[in-house]
Length: 416
View 1 (cartoon, helix red, strand yellow):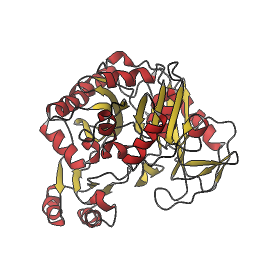
View 2 (spheres, one colour):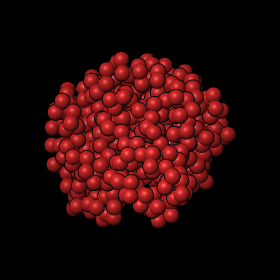
View 3 (tube, helix red, strand yellow):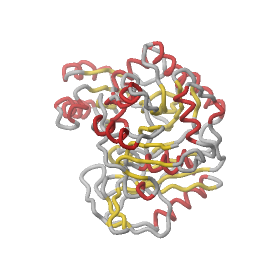
View 4 (cartoon, helix red, strand yellow):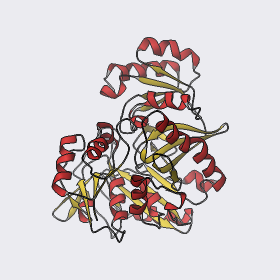
């Protein structure tokens, strides 16, 4: 079987790596890929922001299955276009992907279906913001309604700051069209949790949970990023909590989407806050998380292809996955300055380390930086302390000018 993966990040490198382990996969393509991916898959030029480009690549390569990595193609309707042509593809339709592409749609959906989430207000103008702010206590979370590559959330320490951030978003100066509508939210306290499930439109099968680290600096300081690291362990949540999350969050989402005429097939990422009031939904993603995919797939001992086919063919079951009891950790190495302005073109030095590439290109047998998040150094070991140690030993052996990474991935878990 020939499989095509759309995307160019560490998530896509992890997907390619795992798919190549399937005995049924004879060829893996990736479009556009990156320097590291192109050593493990045949890469093709493609613009993930263009439906015509993605359709053209698929016509040329004729894959038996296509997997969508990033969110933008889903929002553009790539699944709808492929399905119309009878081309098998893994992911939700454009209508179902609104759970991620519109924060206001997601919040309203959660309220309609009585799924726990933070108190919120949808604001289309500064007048709406001014009217809503008295109903919040600082800190106030300000979210852009549209897609912002993981950077559309600001935690404002005061109402004045919240108003200022909302002004910048609504004006288009901060995030362009993505900020044309904003959502104000109460700031929840607790531990974040990434909980992913596969769905066939009716049933769901949970993956192991992971915890992401979104802030750029140690101690959860600095601006939000696409993610600076993640880890997954067998005891991150117990079976009772896993079943609660399936029964009270994941399954009601899938059932609700079907009832509203937008059947959800693919992978549903539930970004949760584990509060004193119980788990509450922060956000949805309609695709694999990055960097959570890296440690999650490191723990997957069964065939990823089989589970993806079950989702597409309407036969998802809880037994679709077999997991290692070991722990896994991913530390993201980024270009200096990320998530702001950063330099590229820095040569990467490695000493025999197997890592997932994100923002890299290859020239003359050497890898160079080409993006903000550059590498996802990922390790698996018998327990979390051993996995963290192994991961950072690898990080310390890799170098490029201006490299930045957090030194405290999974630190809070180690202190418990």
